[in-house]
Structure formats: C-alpha cells, structure tokens
Amino acid sequence: MRAAVLYGTVGAVVLSALGVAPAEGDMTRTAADPVAVAAERAAGEGIRFGKCPVAEGLPDGVRCGTVEVPLDYARPDGRQISLTVSRIAAKGKDAKGRKVARQGALVFNPGGPGASGMFFPLVGHLPDWKRVGAAYDLVGYAPRGVGRSAPLSCQDPKRLHRGPAPAPTHPSPAYKKERVARAKAYARDCARRGGSALRHYHSLNNARDLDVLRAALGEPRLTFMGASYGTYLGALYASLFPSHVRRMVFDSAVNPAPEQIWYRNNLDQSAAFEGRWADFRAWVAKHHRVYGLGDTPRKVLRSYERAAARLAARPAGGKVGPAQLQGAFLQAAYYDDLWPQRALALSAYLKGDPEPLVQIAGPYPEAVVEQENAKAVYTAVECNDAPWPTRWRDWDRDNTRLARTAPFETWDNVWTNLPCAYWSGPRQRPLDVRTGPGELPPTLILAAERDAAAPYDGAIELHRRLSGAALVTERDAGNHGVAGGTNRCVNGYLEAYLLEGRVPERRAACAGRPEPSATGRKAVGEPRAAVADRAVPRAPHGA
Image (tube, rainbow, N blue to C red; front, side, top):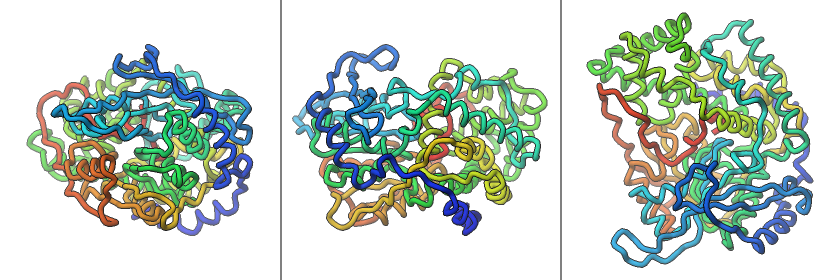
C-alpha cells in the first residue's frame, strides 16, 4: 500500500494548519538580484585550484580550491562562508588518443542532504566515465555545512556510538516516549551549537550557492548532475535560474511537489523500502542452497528475525545489536550488489560465525566525525526546508498505520526525522518547482522502477513539472543511482546527452541489470555501486 494513501487528507490538514515563516527576504523567483551580486563577485575572484589538503583524502591528481558564498543571501555583502571544491581537468583526448573538444565543467551533487561530492572527480578514472572525463572538467564540492564547508555539528561525535541498540518494528509506548525525548534533545543541541547561522542551511540556499559556484568556475551556463536529494537541488536551480542551465541530469529523482517536502516523501520512502526488502528476501530464497536461510521469502524473514532476537540477547562482538543489523540490511535495499555479502554474513552468523556480520554492521570509529556532520546537515536542511507536523500524535498515527504493512523501515525513518517536529527555527516555503515550454533546455531524468530511497513516482512527477525533460527508466530494477553503473543502455543515454545534447522523445526504457550472482565465499570490502549519494555514512532518508 502506498504511504501517500495512508497519509491521506489527514496529513494535508496537519500541514495546512502549521504556521510557516517566510523565506529569507521571501526570496524564491526574485532571488536573482542578491545571488547576482554574489555570483559577479565570485566570477571576478574565480577559484584558485591547488594541492588538496590532507584532510580531504584525495590523490595528487585532484586539485582543490574554495569559493565564497553569503551565509544569508538577503545580505549578500554580509558574512561569507567558504565551500570546498575539487576538480580534475578535462583530459582533452579519448581512449584512442584523439582530440576531444572541452565542453566546460560538469558539477555533481551526490545527495543526502549531508553528502560531500569532493570524491566525484575520481570517476573519470572509471571506464564508463572516460569519454565524459575527456570532454568535461569533473567538479565536485561540499555543500554548505558539509565537511570543511562551514561545517555543522549538533552533538559531540563521541555520543554517536552508544553500543548495540534495539530496533523494534512495533515499538512500545515506553520506547516511543524515550525516542521522543531524544529527538527533542537533538533539536535543542542543533539550535545551541548552530546558533543564529543554523536557519541559513536549507535547499534554497544550496541552489543559490550552486549558481555562485557556476560563476566562480567561469561557466556562463551550468552543466550539472544530481543524485537523489541532488535532483531536488537541481530542480530548484532549474526553477530559479532556467536561463543559467546548459545541461542537467537528475539521477534517482525525488518527488519535488511542495506538499511532499519532506514529511510525505519520507512516508512514501518507508513504504517503498518494504517492497525492496521483499525483493532481497526473494533473491535469497532463490539461492537457498548457497545460504541456507530459507527457500521462501517468509522463511528468509524468519531467519532474519531469529538473528535479531539472538542479537538482542547477546550482541555480536559486543558491537552489533538489532539496530546495527537493520542498518546493514537497509543498505542492501539501496544497492543490490550488496546482496551476496549481506546474505553470506547472516548465514554465517546463524551458523555460529559472527565475524562477517560484525565486519559489515559494526561501528567505524574512524568515520564518527563524518557521520555526525552528515546527520547534522541532513537534519538542518530537511527541518528548515518545510513545515513538519509538530504533534507527536500525528507522527504516531501515520506511522503506526504504515508499519502494519511496511514494518522494515518505518520506525527507523521516524526516529531519523523526528527532531523536525521540535525544530525551533523558521521554516521555508517549498518552491513550486515548475518550468514552462521554452524556459529550460532539454534535461535528462534517470530512474529505476523499484528504487526505494527515491520511489519512482518522484521521477514521474519531476518529468511532469519540467517542460522538455526526457525520462529514462530502468525497468524492474531497484538500485539507488543508475548513472555510470553497469547498465550500458542507461549509460548510452547519459553519454548522448552530456556529450551531444541528445535526449530521447519524452520517455525511453532500458532493461534492468542482471541480478547479482550468489556466492558462498567470504566477501572482502564492498563492491562499487553507481555514482549516487552513497557517500552518506548512514541511510539518507530524505532522498
């Protein structure tokens, strides 16, 4: 059952009853003047690219720099913040050494919100990106709040890992009460640590920052690719600055309708994860001879529940409880190339070997600062972007109903987003993303039919709202992020668009990539997924 149906008219009444503060200076489509001031200044200063700081962890071939943007676009000459930028210049030659004309910069946002795109230029080394990397400077950046870009923090990173945790699919009133208290405390901590600047971390400002970055790169028009939440950012940019768009790719599009931002999108997402969780269990059941977890999806679910109950009684390695188990298998709902590894770890655990499960689900202390930062930015952007229900009883009602049919992810999604119910800052009015005929050059939307993190309805809605957009659908597939992955059909459309500006007639379809092969061998590390918002250390529930 679709979450939008479960939410229904009750949710509409809740949202319409909420008070919404005006956007900063009520800048939506009138944003050009203050942004133009910042963009003109950035164009004059440019970006001085040099050796990347050690903190970025990037190899010598990548060059780094910074661009200054206003903290508050209502005061473009006021306080400035620095965004970090990475680049690998266009190679200028194809694989056969033939000269390729440079087409400018291709800027990428990997989503989240809260993910850094600083790694993006490295995709130029991958075979499927070499032709694009020959024609374009590959440019990544860390949006405001992320990494070293005026970083946000809501709590001491050491508080993130409190050890094994429960993950009830039907939580008790006492557990809910405890989580409400934690959400209130987190919202207070964000307000205290973020101070007066916290209100300026939202999607409209992210879109404005993107135009300043365009100008600093010396590009008269922007060529951009966004994945997941990055598609919403791109849609805002297309609505605010249509004449500044050259080419734009939306990979795994989220639903940009104002009424969906963000409460309803999260309900839809929780419903979609149930379907993807079922896909994974069906695949495991087909390979019962390899994993021994059950020859039907229901039996596989019983194996998972048996492991969760055992972990509740005695955490694996003292580190992995039911919440860590659920988090590891949630990632498998994003990327099916993780399925063999997850199934093997669960199988080994139930047979008495916890080590593979500890490896994939245990905490990574070295990533704790990045994780805390990503969580803080995610929360600030989503809470600032739009109104949220402020009464716990509304959240409890909507998600109790949803959990009856979609128990796998519903409550985990609630706990991630619940601080927005108690957020003290002003909320933006979501922009009505929409362009008319001739306002925007052709754009390209890529989507997988069974994507859970960005349900397919979002791609259809974005396609409807952007005049002249083309939609390429990966049929019967569910990977989150399809660009530059293993599907040659999708990659063909992507290259034709980026290199030649060609798009299909309105809609096109590609057969889904093959299911992963089962393996009985111990996996080492994680396989490469498509270029999407996998840079977020935890599941990015907003997109």
